[in-house]
Length: 257
Image 1 (cartoon, rainbow, N blue to C red):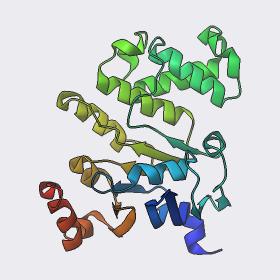
Image 2: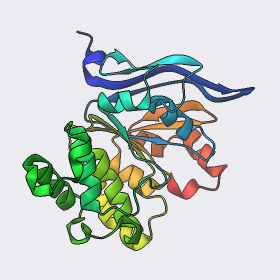
Image 3: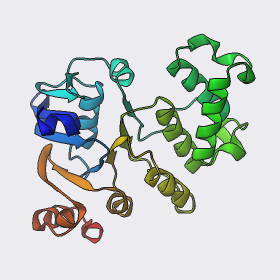
Image 4: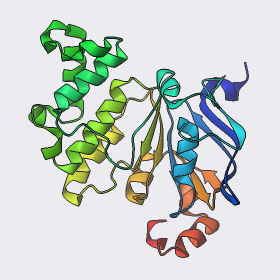
């Protein structure tokens, strides 16, 4: 078997996305290795969100292909990609405000285990659901707030719940879309530690502006500028790349690189 195929879980080849006369994604190729901690960075308007929308099926590429564990998923709907093990968190919380973290996770775990509409049954009646919810609540530091409505949670806890929901789907590929965006400084440490402790067998693609998080988390980085891959490498290589420094200098972000 081809070595690249055996270790690459998610591969984008020659992705192009045009909106009328605007090319938002220009011939992007990216390979996510099994167990990777891979960061996608770039200035505002670089095309990061468009690329993630292509990978997750929210947008359909004008050209190019996407494979997940060797299977072509270029035309699959978002929910079909989730079923195949690709899960995404969003820049903005998409949570049910009136449900508690426990209820939210019970719903997610039940759906993932094929129990669908039976999530509302007394939690004790489904031991597997109960046990998985307890694991997730503890893993994401949500046990103390598990019975509170999501709308009253501190923002950092809401972000933790969102990642817990993603993990409840047992992904093999996890796309973290700016997980610390909007999180107050005092709530970041808990979230950063949780992100760092994500399961080693889950391959993670991180989209993030917080360079402290990027450089502490990633073992591989891809720099996107104007919809095109500028360069890719390990954190040290990226930090010392003159092209990368020039890009961030031009956007007032030289202190980050």
